[in-house]
Image (cartoon, rainbow, N blue to C red; front, side):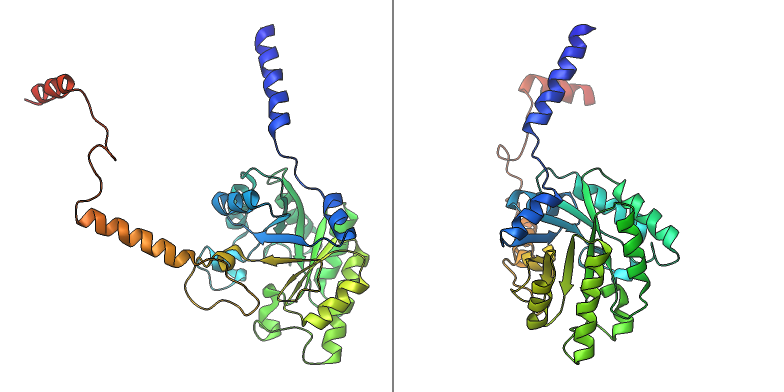
Length: 306
């Protein structure tokens, strides 16, 4: 009995020694203070999360953009809460040091503050590896999202705000459009909401599709890191969708994306090659791709059939 307990204790100690320490909010703020860019990329399953972890990203965002980039939905608003949590769990299984941030998907928080808080708690309880949630908040004065953001922060739940283009409000915005480029009023509204979220207690902000000059000024005026997507190089860091970075889907990519690979072409080529080799009987090859039994066993097997 004692030896079994000792072995278990040794195993736990060994696991603690080899496990990579996850980055924390103080680690991210240390990079911010040092003016070192903060890297963020989305991940939607164990495979993409493993790639992101092994590449050394600072933050993995499990974004509701998985609705369109992974699940084939037409909009992020089509994503079901439990469908989202299923993918969130798989991302958290990938080992690595990245800080993990989860979106709060559409439909899980709008009906009331109480239900919104419960949705956020459910997200945080999905895995102990989730470090924070991200909430989209609109720019109009009485946006409900700001009230919810304050309540989330009051409860000590780490929060990343999201301003500028907020895809969950795309119908109000008239489509996926740059925010803060048409009028001074619109630009000031984005700045004010960013400041409001900082005052509410957010430790970081995502600025999406904001003119680079406006995003740079907002970043300079705030005392928390800004992570830009389509907001230029003047932010504290950058975030991109993994399927865009890797070129995983056919078709046009957004202007603000730099595709670093074309996995769609690579995948198509590999699958076509497999089908061709199968059709021409060059795969599988006996010996290279097969298992065998001794002649004696085979002989007995054939006799057994008769």
